[in-house]
Length: 71
Image (cartoon, rainbow, N blue to C red):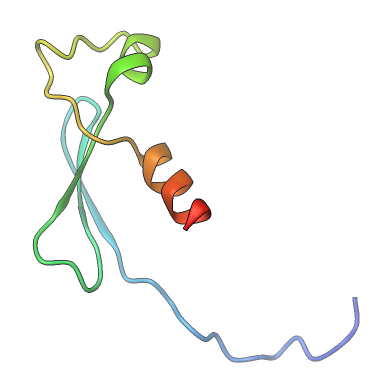
């Protein structure tokens, strides 16, 4: 690898994650009013043994990653 390795960072994301309970997380993201709830649903909940009749289903972090990459 060649070139200047002392380049300035263009952007640093400031995100805060709070654990609510079990697989549920509350994410505070830049330029978003209020928290984004994260958790598990459907096949992901089943894979991890989470009963979505007991724990509310929420969008997974994987769903957000796929949406961001596809966008």
